[in-house]
Image 1: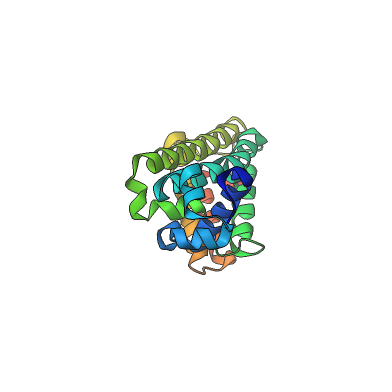
Image 2: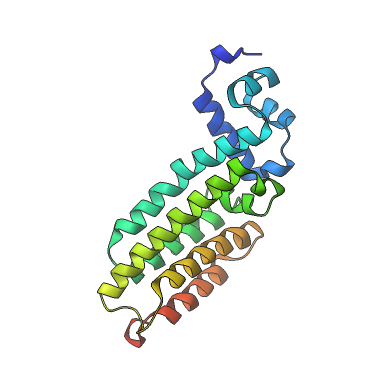
Length: 199
């Protein structure tokens, strides 16, 4: 098997992200990682550390490659409620069809596992949550500026609610929920935030 010096750790980490994302890190053992990557245990341990460190590295990679670009696009969109609706439409489409259909979200999936309590993993979960909530808050502020939101809406609480809604979409889609049902739930939440003219 390849020595640690003879493989690209970046390529390996991408392979591990896909493996953990599809199967779940909790039920994926080091033997499964060895089989998927073609590396020896010693090469994996020498490069990434133990299972928890490997999982943390995969989560960090997922946050930076999969999640953060989407969050930054939402925050910069400027359309307000239509931008949030489009975010969820793309999310539901990605979760229910295509290459990663029914995989859910690697970060969201990790929230419900025992390893979520490990400090190195919990820190990444919190970074993901904060980044998604900040993007939702930015979109809601744009909506407020455009007069799309009902009077008295707490933007911070609404941003948190939308962040939790994204987690719900991720979990329910992995369990097989239909796209139409997920989108109807999202629309109901957004209607509760909007002025009567925007509904």
